[in-house]
Length: 271
Image (cartoon, rainbow, N blue to C red; front, side, top):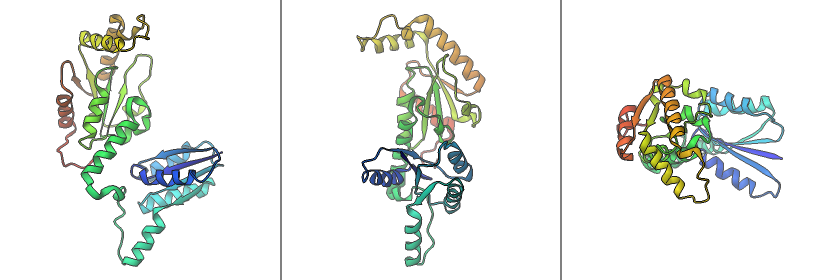
């Protein structure tokens, strides 16, 4: 079975479209995975080293950063991986015709309105890494929100994304270990969301009421369980020494504003 990786130094939209167009020509079972933000030699090595079986792998690359692109090709050759770079030959040909040196800007194809597409990229980032689906985005995030279930992590991330800020959220549960990457990044990027126990219980009970099929015995809105979770979250946030915000009766916009001020977002800053 063939597996295609769409590798990019931006969000990977172009590489994905080319990969899907390739997949559409075959009836065989083919797997696909997008690999965005490959911007350094370290990123290349981390990606290549993560591949367990390189026999039936194909990489479609739209990396425009020349040194990173060439290093990726080198690593692929060493590992016996088939790779094709979509933009490289086209950029080179256009450069010769125009007799000009390219800008080599990742994501430039989407840069008709840089602010608009910055928001689109941030939106895609928030959706991709929502609710701890994939921890690999931690090192690329502008801010990471941690908090218990129903502390408004997702809507706050989406609001921040609309400002062009790459935000992801990680739910806290005593039974689930926190990703080690949180201890390896700038703690200023980590923001903990706290809430009054009674309001959290009320929000969770209201949530359960919407699902009549859910057993009333579930511990989700149990007062003892909620207090246990809050104590665990408080200990974790103190251990991380991160910024904490009490979201009790606080509007999403207000919380987002505090976060933006904390990370130094000025409206025109490029992240």
